[in-house]
Length: 93
Image 1 (cartoon, rainbow, N blue to C red):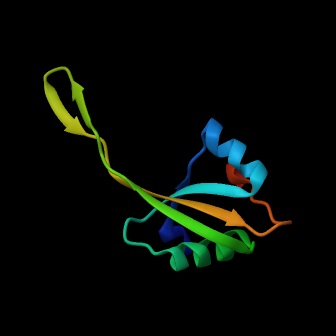
Image 2 (spheres, one colour):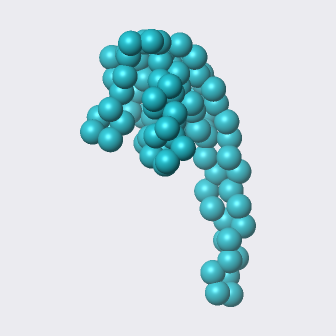
Image 3 (cartoon, rainbow, N blue to C red):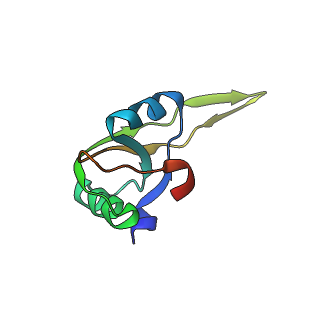
């Protein structure tokens, strides 16, 4: 069930600098709650979660030649771990 909630980790320069503070970013299923995300991270990576922040990003208009489209909307979760726990995002997901 945890793989169904966590779609993939966000690996950017900003999110990698947050890992030093024990915070990790994931793209999650749109209808998931904070408690479901917390349980999924704890079960999948065998860590203890301190808190979870969730945000929705809306799709933006993009134009390719003559056609206008939209980028997909996403739901992101920032997960903070308890001190002493760590996730290797690159190899574990």
